[in-house]
Length: 300
Image (cartoon, rainbow, N blue to C red; front, side, top):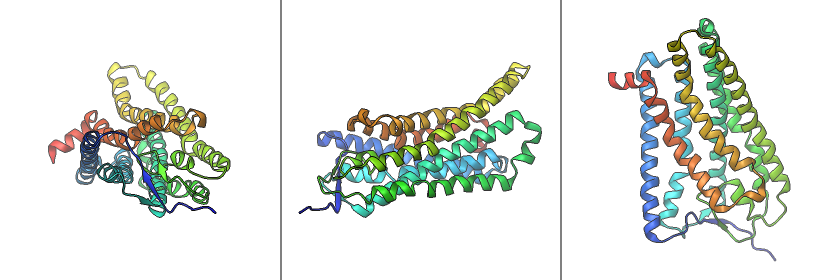
């Protein structure tokens, strides 16, 4: 006789009430700044006609993803910090995981699309307007969101067909596949292999494409004669390169390292980085180093 789990307890951080209150303050502050920063970027892009360009169209999509991305995990973290004994139902856990995977996958493809936009701007500046027309931009953004909706389906179907017969303690801040698979009371080999294949499509192929585009971009920039021209070309790509390194670096380390090297403490720290820190940094990175965004802010 087996009793199957119908709800989970997210353990989150271990520590005293003081530590939990401190983390609650840090997480809630970071969440508020993330929402405000990305909302301001969306507002500036909508209100300033100078920002109605392909680059800022994709940036507005990225801001929407970051708002939803952090909202899929942080509120549940705050609930758990206030009341560690409050369970999350099986259905709620599944929904949180699917939404998180949708948004993470969408961001992977959006960053690749933004790399292509920078490639056209630097390598084919005279044809930029004709290549990156409105119709193509909409298609690329729609393809990114559609990929986010479709690619995680196989992970979800296989993961939630697994039997969970106890314990019901998830040693994590939110429902994430590596932490959840440890609770399955059956072999998870197929799910792990499907997850690995999914990572190839969502992480390795986009990052390979981004690397190829930046090889072409750097090659074109080095051919520019003037120092000022090279500096301007590099500055248009610096923000995107920073975000790519932060996001893909942590995601690849989290999902593509051997299962034997996973530890709950390390996984929790990494997940905090890409669920809280990166969405918090994105608006800062794109605004502080961007004259157009700062000019729109001053004007409005």
